[in-house]
Length: 245
Image 1 (cartoon, rainbow, N blue to C red):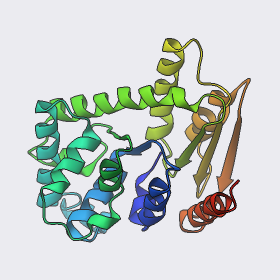
Image 2: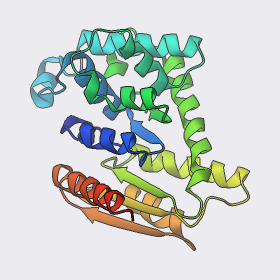
Image 3: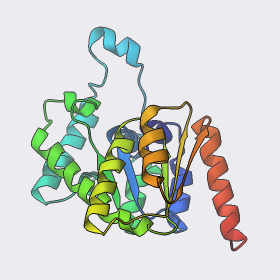
Image 4: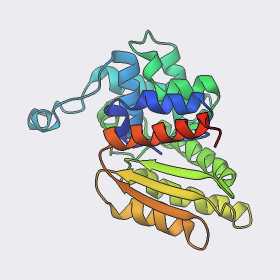
């Protein structure tokens, strides 16, 4: 599960490596992560001075990002796609600056489930006049159901990583987990969760590390800068794979 800072700081190639090795079996991200991924793939850059842009009302008002992503959601709604699929297919149709750096495109091409979980009003693209609340809601809700459908595979040995999402993904995960357990006789259980972030937050601690692993499994909190912790984690996983562990 990804927050926007993971993508914005250039860690996508590490996640792509894990996807190509078959380590990641579902990729879920908040709206911020999807926006950064879209902009990096399509335009080659993704950042702005929020404080300066807020003064004159230009913050988040990029025409290309707002129109392109919202039109993707509207097209996806008509085709009964999830938000992640809608964005990946829209990117496939564009001339891209960095297609090899997109986690969404990589997941689409590898056939790995990937989902985007929006919070209406919390993302810059909702400021754009092309925004359709119906399209945002329907495509993201479809992805929520798909995430819930992936969670039973965690049973007895799966791992949930929350990388840098302080609010949205912990909240979404908890609700998706209760759906999975409601439909599968209390499963999944016996899995491991881990939250990696630069500072401690209530929701990741409670909704990812503690509550889901009560009675079975194990939860961990690891605090540090993403640019250091994520490469170390990926290095350890790849080393274990190459040693046959």
